[in-house]
Image (tube, rainbow, N blue to C red; front, top):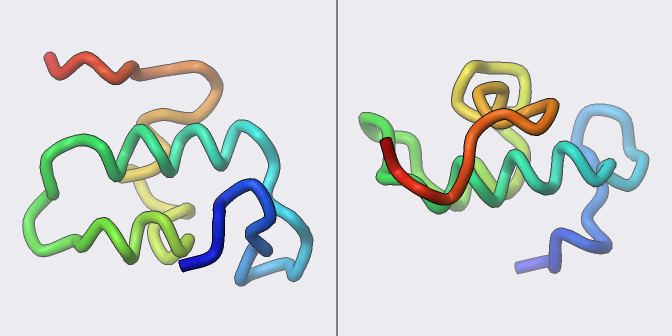
Length: 65
């Protein structure tokens, strides 16, 4: 798997920004939601939805609620 530090966004073809990288890591660390695999979260397939979006802009944390 490609390290997120050098990962390329599948939608734009540009390197992912720091906020998106943080949101993906936090979303993947939580318990899987339904049948969403961690691999799909880390690869960027859920960036537009609320799975990764819940952690954008400094929201969310590593600590489960």
